[in-house]
Amino acid sequence: MESLRKRFQEWDTNLFKKKNKWVNLIALLIIAGCSGLIGWGYGIYQGTGTWPGEGTEAIYPEIEETTASADFDTWLEKDKSQMEFYREGYNCVEFALMAARSAHWEGIPAEIIRLNFEDETGHLLLAFPVEGEWRFIDMQTHREIFPRTGGRFVDHVIIGVDKLAIIWEPFEVPAEEKKGCCGK
Image (cartoon, rainbow, N blue to C red; front, side, top):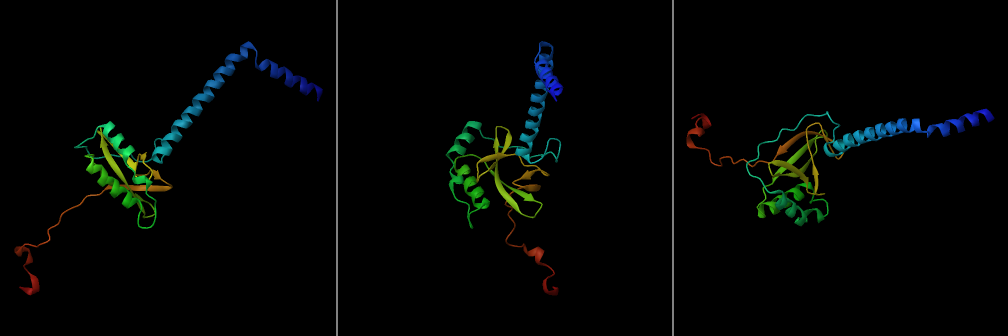
């Protein structure tokens, strides 16, 4: 037992001698580098819901009208839609619609985006064209997210990202299309 203790003490003192300092420094740098790489990967997972290299790449439509970053950031700071309480009758739909209306009133273009989930539910958020890039904001929390098919959002797997589009359809059917009614 005594010899084991002496060996440990010798090992402990030899560990910090000059020749071992370089080995320790290199080991410390390797550990720091690996932890940085793991942190980078986990950051991507938190932002997109998928690990680096997983999921499909998101291809968004071209931006026709853009907003200056300063104008957008100022509007987002002023917007108080997230101060409303989530409740029955006031959920992500109302948050997105109210914030989109507010943005349009301030001259900031906004698109209403629906995230479709595997469990057949969904979530609405807004997309803003800011300085040539789309910025997706969850208006309930004012957090920027990076949605993509295969990614995750609040423990849901995203299977699609849709933009709300209102399509006008003719209310009246032209007379020539009414042929064939009642056997005539």
